[in-house]
Amino acid sequence: TGLFGSMASRPRTRKPTSSRLPRPGPSATTSAGSASRADGTYSEACLEELARLAEPADVVALGPGLGSREDVGFLVRGLLAMLPNKPVVLDADGLNVLAPLKADGLPERSGPLVLTPHPGEFARLLGIPTAEVQSDRERLTVEFCRRHKLVLLLKGHRTVVSDGQRVYHNDTGNPGMATGGAGDVLTGLVAALIGQGLSAFDAAALGAWVHGRAGDLAAGELGQVALTAADLLDYLPAALSDERRATSDERKQEGGATNPSL
Image 1 (cartoon, one colour):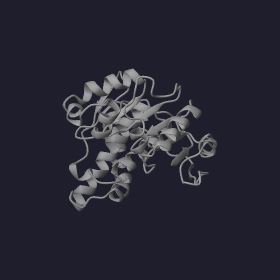
Image 2 (cartoon, rainbow, N blue to C red):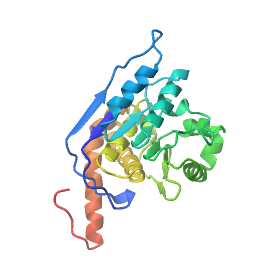
Image 3 (cartoon, rainbow, N blue to C red):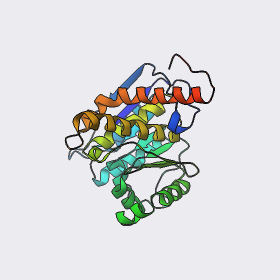
């Protein structure tokens, strides 16, 4: 379980495809080995400890590596309920333990919630075949977001991001990124952008673009076949630089002044 906190900077106000990233402030990452039962399952004490540790963080990323036991569902639902105002990015096992997600399957929350499923995980949440998801990606994403009042990033070719009102289709990325751990990198990236002050929708849309751009840069140098999640991390700084440069060029075309500090 990763708990990620960072000092918030000024919020982003431009559209997701041409954002201005806030400059990162001091940040802290906390991960905890927490109290569990004798059989290794998560206990109520564990849930309370994790909720306490997460309280000072700006955002929580939850799911990768948790496993699929019944007690993981108890932990995920418990943290969502105990941190109702906290932005949460939910992925991987954090999604699987909620499937299929019923109308009342999520606790009442005021804080932003971002889900980042691949098509198979989204299909399990909906209780339908993956092929049905792939044949109607945008409609199913938008309807799901409206029903559950959250942001969803549906991975895959031309990743779809929606909050139930707006829709963003991403155009970066390549098949080489279909490798273990690549989705975990995206989870952390979206959480980090929320921690820097972006809205949940903007963080998901921008995170998808930067993540895919890092994959494209890595594939250009290393090829797609041998691409690993660690390679994506190595190319994130260059991808972020490309995003800033594209934003600066767009602002010049619009006749606006650029900010030399970005």
